[in-house]
Image (cartoon, rainbow, N blue to C red):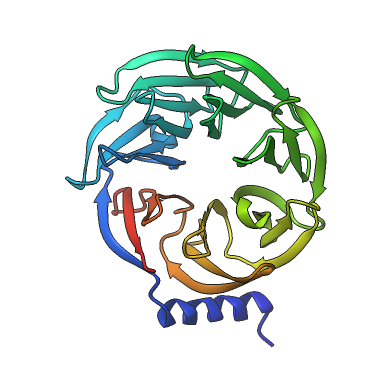
Length: 323
């Protein structure tokens, strides 16, 4: 009898041919980029995609109109999280190698300043109302940077190194994945402390997450085993669980189309549609490449970072998302 994993993989492959909701539109080479690629961010006005080439110690600036790399910010230390702020015209780059968040001018890409944390600066999120940037770092903390001064104004202690986290827009909570502590921490950003934690049950390695704030749903992707888990943010209870391809590192919720896009290093983009409040159905599994586990969604396009492999150079693949 075939294992459930084999059957699941076969079903996903069939679905990928049956539906065309995510369509590859173009491929943009990243010349000379070796090693692992981490997260991306977008300057919408200039059509610049910033790609954290962690293994190459650079951020590649891709012009999406010219379909090519126009600049490479070099000399970084394992860049992981990247965040472009249009109102400040600045690019923030979190470096895992030395714990710094380095700040660059959004027009010239010249270095502006450096903010130093203890170690392993990782994901970045922006609170637009308060004009503060949250930085996951070290063995367990969320640092807070004031954008006006580029100074650290707070440090919220956690039980383990934070991976992906999401900020409520209509409330004060931050939901934080802590795989090292085997739970999700719920932080009050006004009190600057953890108010509760949510268990993952038997699942582990919770790295990416997405927030559907309007419907009070937090969706987390785990790697051990590969699962997508949705929580009710009002009760903290798990409401559903689905199979997923392996090695997922980015997850985006599309509120217009009621979809989830999960980029999985196993070599797929898994697309789920929310059909009811607690029901998500696999809509499509788009075959990609092994190791292509990070992406960025801008509301219309999905940008997938594909690392170099064999004779194929590293690249960005842009997928058009259909209605």
